[in-house]
Image 1 (tube, rainbow, N blue to C red):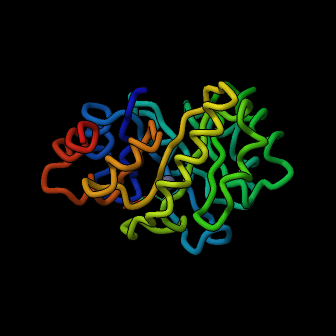
Image 2: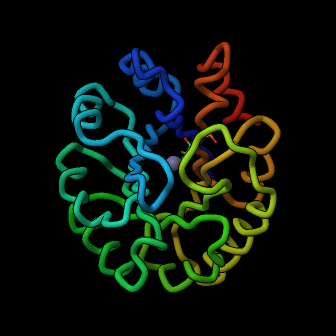
Amino acid sequence: MSFRIAPSLLAADFLHLEKDIELVNKCGDVIHLDVMDGTLVPNISFGFSVIDQLSKIATAPMDAHLMVVHPERWFEKLAKDGVQMCSFHYEAAGRNTSRFIKQIQDLGMKAGVAINPDVPVSKLFPYIGKADYFLIMSVFAGFGGQKFIYESIDRVAELKAEIDRRGAKAIIEIDGGINMDTVKAVREAGVELAVAGSSVYGAADPAAAIAALREA
Ligand code: DX5
Ligand code: ZN
C-alpha cells in the first residue's frame, strides 16, 4: 500500500502561490485544492480564477475537493484544467452520488466521495466498487488548522475493512488535522493519501515536513 501526502493550498501563502505549488511539484505527491461556496460549508475559499492559473504550473496531480452544493456544475471545468482527482460531498449529492461519480469518470478524472465527521461511514458503502476514492473528513469541512477528531481513525478502519471485504480497489484519503501526532495512526488504519495544510505550510521547512509525514 502506498502512502502519499497532499499539501492543501488553503494553508499556502496566497501572495506567493507559485512558490507553494512548486514545493508540491518538487517534494509533495498531490496538490489538494479546497473549493468552498459558503453554503455547504461556512467559508469561501477560491475558485477558477485561481485554479486556472495554478493549473499552468502544476506538474503534480491536482485533487479538487468540492465543498459546494452543486458540485456537478464544475466537473467539466475542472477536467479542462487538467485536474486528475475530483471529490464532492455526499451531503451535497445524496441520491445523485452514483451519477456524479460516473460524470467525473467519463471526463477522465478519478472520482471521490467525501463525508463530514457526522455522516455514518456506511453511507459510503453503496459506492464501493464505483468511486475511485473516498475522502474521510477528520475535521468539519470549512477551515484549516482545526483539531483532528480521533474517531476518524475508527471510521477509516471501518471503511477499509468493507473495501477489502468486497475486494474493491478504492483508496482512502483523509483531510483535517493531519500532523506528526496523527499521521501514523491514519496510515495504519488504511489511509493512502493524507491531506496536510497547516502542518506543511505552517512548518519552518515545508519540504522537510512533507518528507517527515510521508515517512512517519
Ligand atoms: C478543510 C479543508 C482542508 C484543510 C486542511 O475544510 O478541506 O483541506 O486545508 O487543513 P489542516 O491540514 O490545517 O487541517
Ligand atoms: Zn480539503
